[in-house]
Image 1 (cartoon, rainbow, N blue to C red):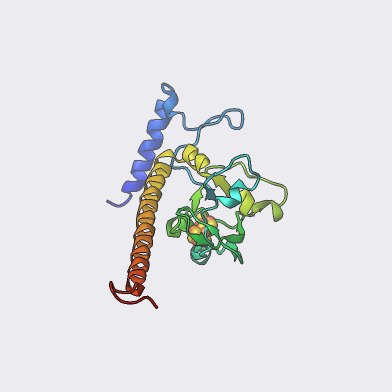
Image 2: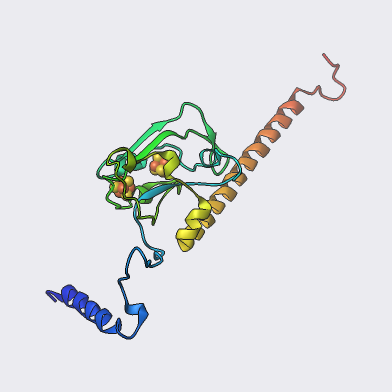
Amino acid sequence: MLGEGILKGLAETAKNFAGSFVSKERMTTVEYPEERIAPIEAARVFPFLVYDSKNPEDANDWEAGMRCVACQICEKECPPKCIYIEKSKDKKPDYVGKMQIYPARFDIDISVCMSCQICVEVCPFEAIKMNNEFELATEDRFGGLLLDRKELSKSNEYYHQIHPTEAAEVDARLAEEKIKADAKAKAAADSAAAKAAAAQEATKPAEGEPRQ
Ligand code: SF4
Ligand code: SF4
């Protein structure tokens, strides 16, 4: 029906207005910044890069555990082109232990980002997620809103704090991939060992045959 959406919206507003006199649940605004509403789990503002903490005491823990492998898919897909990535020259192990390149530079210009979450959806490595931090106002119009890889990096524990359901699903998916990767690596190692043993057997002199 034409205008059904508008009527539903008005009904919700009226319900909240009337309900706010009797129930705190219906109070949809508060006197910010003195009062704050805890962000809901689905809230999303700007992206952040997830790292798996290995040694929280280490100042470079965020860099060592970065999930991003600088594949640049997010950079290509970002509609307003506010992601800038430079690939590393060397490699480091990813979450399944495979050696991968990583972003030597990863910047997001949050003055341009439109919070569409496309970067999150296209990332094959669960490396970029949406943060719910919104108090990012700064007087530095340019540098202050251009976040580099260190500023963007947040631990998986932080991800669990802000989006617990989603983070648990991601962990389960990654654990499953790790099991598959380990099984594949073990099968490859077993096959290589079997081939080496067979080759060694083939070079052995037959019984009764004089040794060379
Ligand atoms: S949320 Fe959208 S606009 Fe922002 S960096 Fe990701 S893809 Fe780009
Ligand atoms: S965040 Fe994901 S999609 Fe973007 S470069 Fe890193 S691994 Fe690739």
